[in-house]
Length: 432
Image 1 (cartoon, helix red, strand yellow):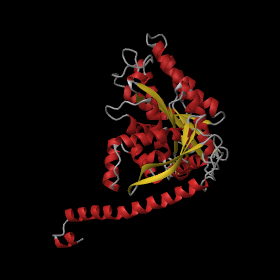
Image 2: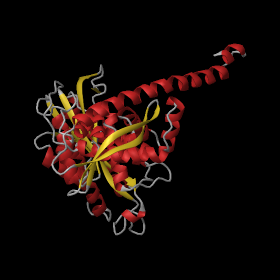
Image 3: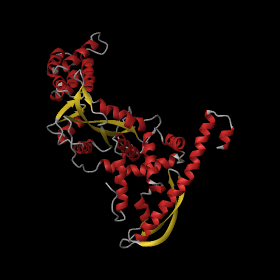
Image 4: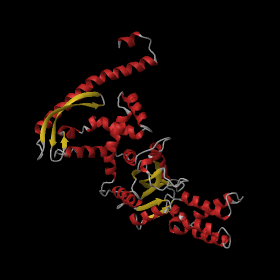
């Protein structure tokens, strides 16, 4: 304080002052937290009743790190010879996972999942909070907690309520670059037939209460929640359905499944969202219209773009069957007929799900932009950075945390995690 008052006031001096004051305040705060937690541990250990087969082995000391710094922490250790497993009752009761307090562990997971790299998470923690945690330690905490996060995503749904006129479910898949040793023997899309990525599915659920003055649908603010999975489509479908149930699918006015026309997603819709309104993403439909026209007249044809626009207008007027019939008639007898028919197969399979004029008149979304944006930001923004290669479990764990955070459920998940840890002591769970 004296040095600041004696010197010339400027921005550099203010920056140094605040950092020094933070350090000074953190020291007594850290001592207070350490003292309080030690008192709590002593009470927990004195009241703990060992489970059958557990043997008390004495007190052990570790260094616990919290938001304000590190402090020593003594607690009893119990060992079960039959199970070959040790147990610290105070650690479980207080939620001290991997030697971090719950508040710091939660912050580490938030930064590790949110920042593009673990190194940036390390630097952000240091720069914004004066918290020193190495990138390796950030990764370690994220992966340990992430395993529970993925299991939490897959938990059985408790049916929720929904007052929205329309509830949407949407899903899509994208590739995540995986380390070569986990791809041995897998076929892929590369020229030599090998794989570089593994497919991960992302699902989202959101609601809609209104349309704008032009009749366009408006997604409810912060209504979107996400789930992710590296499991096959047959397992991902029920996961997305569970999320829809959790969000109140049973009480929503209308449920709409909004996906592209891929066969796997189509079958998922039939199995998991039977009798619900299903819409094939309009932009995927237009992409396939381009394939049909390329086979029919070629991309370099002067009318190619004009005919694309014509397809778009007619699709928006429920004319998909007319377009199929006209295209078949036009290509009859041509050498390109087989290729054109192959491209038309996408539309033939999805006629009922491409009545875009009807869907728009009802105020529905006809584009799957929400889940596609999620694939770019949630998955691509963290797992598809230049030079990155993941283990499947590593990517799965961090994506689970990103989905939970983006769905605004981090507090809910963390409370569940702490309840689980406390339950290992046969203690009363934390307040709901």
